[in-house]
Length: 102
Picture 1: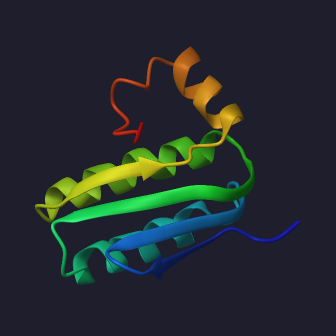
Picture 2 (picture 1 turned 180 degrees about the vertical axis):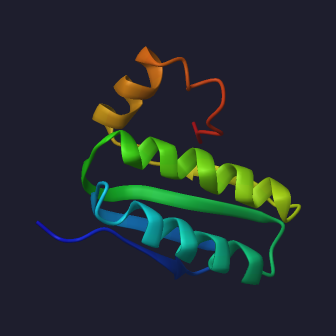
């Protein structure tokens, strides 16, 4: 299994991929802060299609990145949230908080 990473992709987007767990959560949060602060666009999206496995740390990370984006005056959109993460978010009542793309 590949270690989780967060990287910048074309046109104001970020890609979250690999295994998102407690071993990489803080590292990905720091990377996300840097990438959001350095983004030149007001609207930033995160593509989650390449997440292969995630614990609740993945949802916590997305919520933290949402807060970080708001703190820098940016709007964040989450794309391709894996079904298992979507189900966990639903159980915990987080779907209303997450700006999911249709």
